[in-house]
Amino acid sequence: MSEPAAKPRFFARPKVRRILSRTVVVVGIVLAAIGVVSGRYGLLFAGIIAVGLGAAMGPARIRR
Image 1 (cartoon, rainbow, N blue to C red):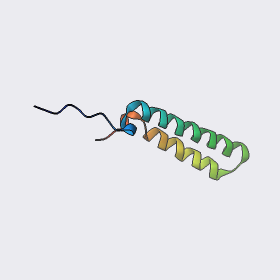
Image 2: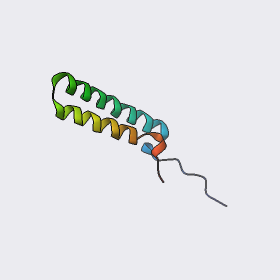
Image 3: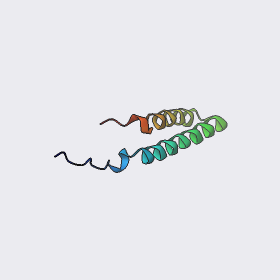
Image 4: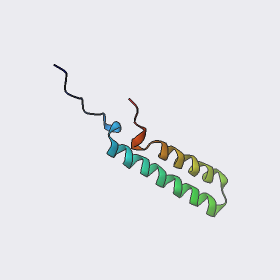
């Protein structure tokens, strides 16, 4: 007989990945806003990168 399907690891669960990706996107938006308001382009670029990473972390990106 086949074995029962194993539970996905903690970070492979779609709900956990969704929460993490949204958190990273929000942090990126805050960094970008602070960068724009204060004129610090390093924070702006860090915010843009964080938003991109958060979008890539979404639950649709789980690969096995």
